[in-house]
Amino acid sequence: MARKEFAHHEAVSALVREEEGGYSAAIAVKALDGMGAPRFHKILDGQKFKTADDADDAAALQLERLVNVDEDGQLSWAASAN
Image 1 (cartoon, rainbow, N blue to C red):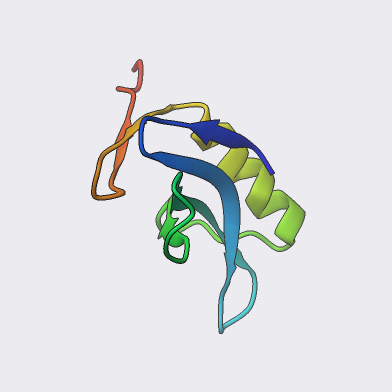
Image 2 (image 1 turned 45 degrees about the vertical axis):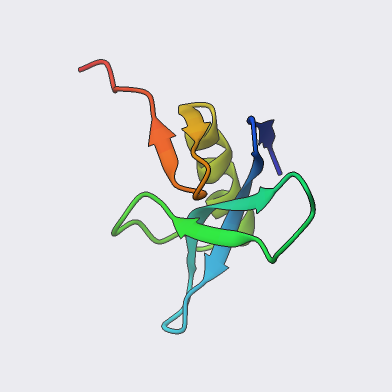
């Protein structure tokens, strides 16, 4: 699990187990004041991973691109260099 801290929130790599099998990569966001449950944002739409470790590894790589979490807990990404 990778972690990044921002002004009002922390973000950690995570995963979501899918009902039809496999896992999706996700970023979990929680307020730094400790209030409220974490909010999970599925990332890498359409990609499913066979193992939890693979999904978490993919989420950790994407967490490196995360540049901000706003006051409402929404994610802001660095532009990709294509």
